Structure formats: C-alpha cells, structure tokens
Image 1 (spheres, rainbow, N blue to C red):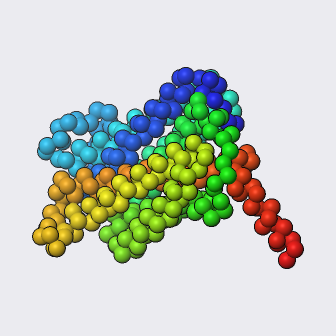
Image 2: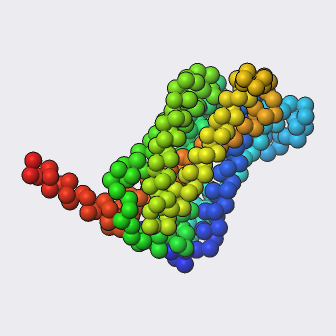
Image 3: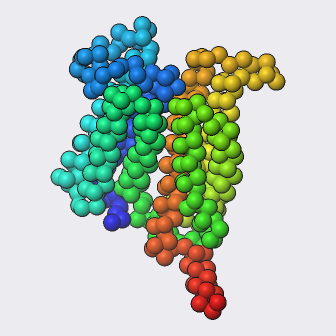
Length: 320
C-alpha cells in the first residue's frame, strides 16, 4: 500500500497535487459566503436564478450584488473541484493499482456528496446543512492532503525512519488532538451559523491551544522527519489560528479598551473571520496527518518508545 513516487504515474501525481490546491477554492469561497451570510443569495439549485450555472452572467454581480457574486463563485469553484476529481479518478483507473483507485474513488464520492449537501442546503434553506457542509469540507481537504502525502517520493523513506522519543503520553496527545480540533471546528460552525456558544468556542480555543502545542512539541522533537514536518505545520497553523481568532473577536465585537468599535460587514471583519475558518481547516488537516503518520509508524514497528513501553504495560496487567 505504501509506495514511492516512481511507482505513481506522473499524471496521477500531478492531479493529486492539483486536487489539493483546487480544493482550497470552494472552501475559501464557502467561508466567505458564510461570513457574508450569502448562502441563500439564490433560491434555486443547480441553476442560478433559472440560468444554467455555467451561463449565468457572473461578473455582472461583482459590484451590483456581491452576495450573488460570492455564492455563484462558490458554486463554480465546486464544479471545478468536481471536474478535477473526475480526472483524478479516471486517471487512477487507467494507470494505477487498487489502493490508488480506492482513494481517488473516495475523493470523487466525497465531492459528489459535498455538492449534494450544498444543494440541499439551498433547496431546504437549513443552516444546519450549511454548517455540515463546512465541516465535511474540512474533512474532504484532509483526505486530499493524506492521499497526496502517500503519493510522495519520500513517503517510503519517511515511514521506515525509526524514532524512540515519542512516548505514550505524547502519542496519546497526538492521537487525541484531531478529535479536539474537530470538536472546536464544530463549535466554530455553530457560532458562525447560529450565532451562539461563543463562550464554549473560546474555552475550546484554550483547550486546542494547550493540547495542540503539546502534540506539536511531541512531533517536532521526534527523530522521524515526517512527524517533525507534521509538528511544524501544526504549530504554524495553530499560531495563525490563535491570532486570527483574536482578530475575529475584535473585528466582530470591538475592543473598548483601545476604543475600537466593530463595524458589521467591514472588510477587516470579512477577511479575518473567513481566514479564521480556512486556517482552522489547515490546523485540522495537519493534526490528522500527524496522527495518521504516527499510526503508520507504530504499525511498522518504527516507534521504539511505544513498542518498548507497551509490553511492560501488558506484563503489569498480566501480573495484576
């Protein structure tokens, strides 16, 4: 299942990279749609005001109707990632073996499900579906990143590098962090879509900051290059996310201590809140990569710090 780049056809490899990059378009546009509350700019789907989606006069709305311009841009971006996913799946069935086909099929089915969920959100006009659409979008991006990582020319080397510094405590934190971040992502979705649970989201941010920092430290101090890279990506995303979270709070609620008054719909508020959602997705994907890599290394017997500890734990249980 674990291959090197030489075993992956160049067309599949390039399309896997393209899928990760293009996936950022509908996700970013979707975050902007939520910030602007433009999810119901059109009451119909898959058409837009009765027009074929590709024939709708999109640029006409750039200045006249920003909500429709943003929402239709999100729809077009969704069509684009759908097209790229089809190309990825078809190329894998032409050039690759079974495990690659499974992954690309999963990516394609996830895109179809995302499109259907987005359409149902419009046709049923349900904020809950909009929130789920955002959460599953983050999960989809993590799937794309994980697949591209496994196609890397260095994957075979990374998965065989041994490490004896990751102990059971750090391993538990690394495995738990994606769950904690996912929970926080859901709380953020509730706040953005239903305008409630602000205190819970702030408390969750503190927990994510603590657990995420400790997990990142555990990854960075590892001897395995893949784990170190995952830790660095996680700590950078975490710092950006904390800064953007603070910025989102200030631009949305103001800060009396410095005399700053929040202006609803301001450019700073729109950009900061939207970026906060997108970077949260990067934080989630980096934690998923770290936890998945740890599981792969453990299964391959490369984590001496865990393999040496577990027999001791089992022996103690047996004696007891």
